[in-house]
Amino acid sequence: CTSLGGSGYRLKTSSELLKVFDRIWALEEQHVSNMSLVKALKTEIDSSRARIKVLQQDKLVMKNKEKDRIEVAIQSLSDERKLRKQSESLHRKLAQEHSEVKSCFANALKELERERKARILMEDLCDEFARGIREYEEEVQCIKQKHGVDGENHDRLILHVSEAWLDERMQLKPAEKDTIVDKLRLDMQTFVEAKCLIESRE
Image (cartoon, rainbow, N blue to C red; front, top):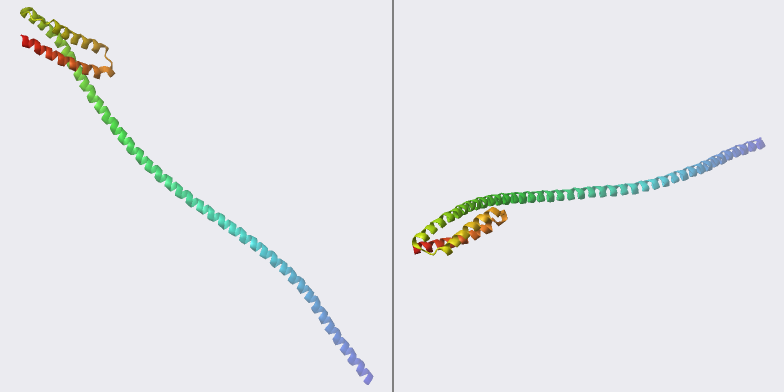
């Protein structure tokens, strides 16, 4: 009995040891499996970290590009605003200058019209004066014949003034009218002085 009892105890002990060994073996296998899983997870985590880092860098680059685009857009708007202000200022300046030029041109036209009318009036007066000279020359001839006054020099002067004026009036160009009118003023003054001299001799 004692021998059978000892054998049973040993079998029980051996069975327990086998269970312990099986448990240890299972734990080791689980540990190995867990280590592989941990290694795989670590690799995945490292890969995820790398991707996150790349995404962060891309995000920073995109942010900088967006910032640059915004700054360029703001600068473009500012430049456009400045150009518009300069254009408006130039437009106002040109409009004012155009108005001034238009006003000066209108005044110049009025002045030219006044000068033209004055010149026409002077020319008409000179025409009348030239015709009057011829009539007066006939009167001087009569006076010379009646009183024996030497009017030859005055006749020449009168005839010269009259014929010179009429000849120049026929050939006169617009640009020469002012000059001939000024010349005629001197001739008229000379004629008046000569007329006064003749009348004083009468």
